[in-house]
Length: 514
Image (cartoon, rainbow, N blue to C red; front, side, top):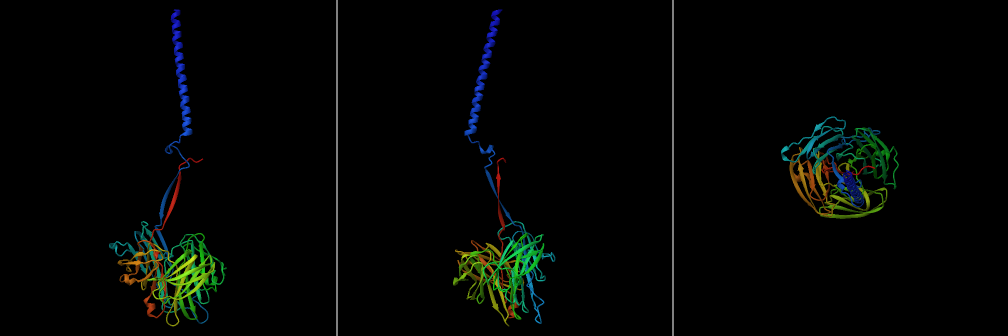
């Protein structure tokens, strides 16, 4: 009995020792695993797919394109003062106006109305089968300012709008031709303007399409002295919501032979144009709309000059610089002269009469500057007319729309260092395709092409550059004015038909916020 108990005890002791050994081995193994895991965490880099790394960034680019387009078309030319003094009363004579709107490409809807929303009219594609997607609307009845609104289906090369207003008179103080392409809104504008001496009137016309009022701040430089000019009136102009405002530049900045003004919208963008007219006694000396000059550049091309134009150049730079001038012709540049301009002051330079075959002016400065050229022609009985040609933003595809009762001539320049190949498509007054014309333009050369050289009854032209960019304008004539032996001088700028797009970058951080 004692032996059996002893055997049982020995078996239990052996079993206990075995369990202890197993536990010890498990403990050692666990310790080794823990040590290996810690070492792995220290020395091994885990896959980024299973770890939130707050240093890693993913950049996404989004292209945002403008589909809703709005342009402002000012009212026909008017006199600043219709009352006058004494027996000599100002007269607008037989002035009348016409405007035309066009829309190109995939358009959902396009319409025009007065700035107050009256007289709404829809643009129409009169030939759906030609595949050109050109909508058009003509209006010779309404003389007030108007708005052209278009909604595109998509942003694409060749899609956009082109509209213009032309007014003319054969009698009175506004004898001649006045024209402008319709304008888009921006926070910043700058203008180079002619004289504010006695007999000259300059009115800054502003339009605020926003639903909130805004104020505009004006800064000015002149020909008499360097530096900013003080205004004789307030330098701030309030423009009510969805309204126009007119500011008298001649009263605010008198007795200058030339002006540079910059304006800045403080709360909303505005459309801006300057209405200028001139008289000498009872003789009409011209009138026109003047568009902005854009930003300063070292090289500027001014298309729109023709033989026998009397040309006066307006220049302004922040630094003193020499400036090289040359006429642009079909056979290449013709050197004119070199001039020196002072810093922060407007320079007015008489260039004399433009030579035969001149179509433009090349301006090259060592320092950035802005430039515009005032052109003048003389008619019968001491009447004359003028226009001011400003730089045209180059675009691969652009268009000009010419209203009824007017004629057009394209003046195109190649300011680049390489030859250009151009295609010009012509459409009639209903927007129907008429014909096209191909044109090769060597570097530094310029050409002039009448609308009727493209095809009969062409009123709308679209110019496309195969590679590179051309600078062009359309010279406007009105047969009624020419038949009355009156000088008529005006220029229309093309409107870009390229997508208005903005690239937005978005960075996404995958890490955990501390």
